[in-house]
Image (cartoon, rainbow, N blue to C red; front, side, top):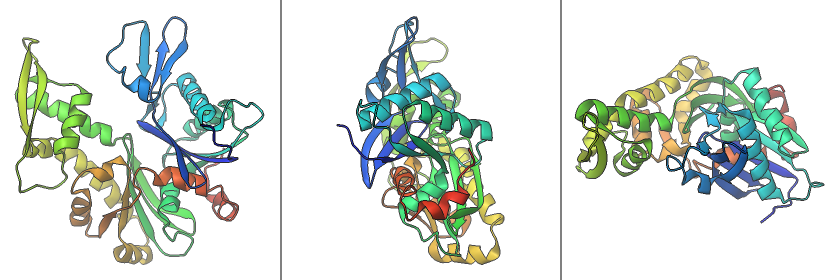
Length: 337
């Protein structure tokens, strides 16, 4: 159903894209496109395309046009954005919405420009870029308009970003181009090295969702999965425990902690004291990993907590950034186009 709002907040994610109009989530689609190779035409987009991953003939390519939060295939990204903007706004070519679209902290000017050009070509009237930690803070309703410190840790599928914010801007930040998808890859690698078996990332994600944890659990649980023998190529069953999964995830989780620690190290002391009082707000799909708040609290020495809207706060903040009362205050801190 078309939403005739002039302002849209778009969170263009590596795995999932969300659009908010006003204060309402109007679209949530996997960032996946299926294309007929020879005709170069879109076969399917979003959830339907995702079901085709790894299950199509050579005549169809199923692609994720975003890698680690940035555009990897410009043409496919443009087609994807055109599809979702039309789905939300309708096919009326006279109605062209104004859009605030997110980019990760630390992207290059070339990468930012690619996102800006792609969203304009997708059928929007005006487009602005906002860094994801700033959008997240707005969407969480943190008091970032004051000269006091607020810290956000965004655990996305393709990026991990940590930032300290004050006066509607980013004071200190760091990011790494790795995220929840690297947790899946860590499970794939662990199963191959320890058991000599091959599993796909879809199976690894299922294992992560079933047994994944950031801190050791007292109760032992297990899951049976189907894998392929690395030597014979024959199918084999494997039982994995939550201890196995925690061992597999340890190194990747350490790198997430290190990203947050680097930001605290370069934050002015006056703002660090604020963060100790207020804590670190965790968002993104990685916020759902059991025990991630306890891990961050233990390793950083600062209280960490999960926000109420971890997966939607970035899109909500992007939409809020276009509000007539907010936009003038943050405009100077938006990435140049």
